[in-house]
Image (cartoon, rainbow, N blue to C red; front, side):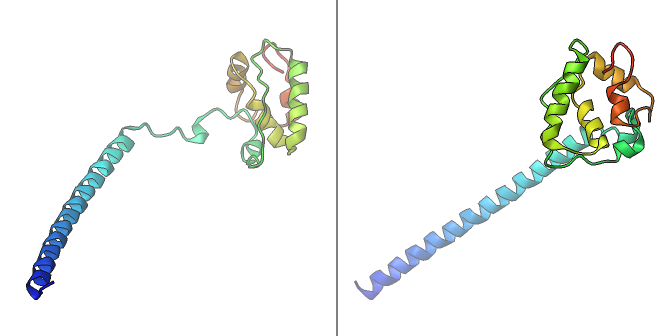
Amino acid sequence: MTTQQVLDTMCALQAEVAASQADNAELRRANEELRRDLQQVEERAADERAPPVPLRARPMPFLRAIMNVVLPTKSLGTKVSFTGVEDPKAHLTAFHTQMMLTGGSDAVYCKMLMSTLSGTTLEWFLSLPDGHITSFDQFAHCSGNNTL
């Protein structure tokens, strides 16, 4: 290979590198523009979302001490559901059986039992006055047609 051929090859390679760098710069500009557009869309979507209802604005039938207890992260959750049609004693038996696996305090039992309510029983629970439920025994044995 002659010196001229080497110089020609080097010039061709430099031209390809320059073209590649120009392409990369254009891709970077396009990428940045897409990021800005995406950020603007996300900001608009965040502005349009309704703000979450603060916890204190929701009904709190449990005593504040129960509400303040955090459920354990290893909590398995319960697989039973109570709509008010089922037998309350059978529901509590199934609930206790499942909770034996998880354990927990009185407050954890309250919160976990609440998570099994649905339909009219959930409506009943949410209609209770703030702070009405002070223990699991009270919650489990409340009297009335829609209760456990």
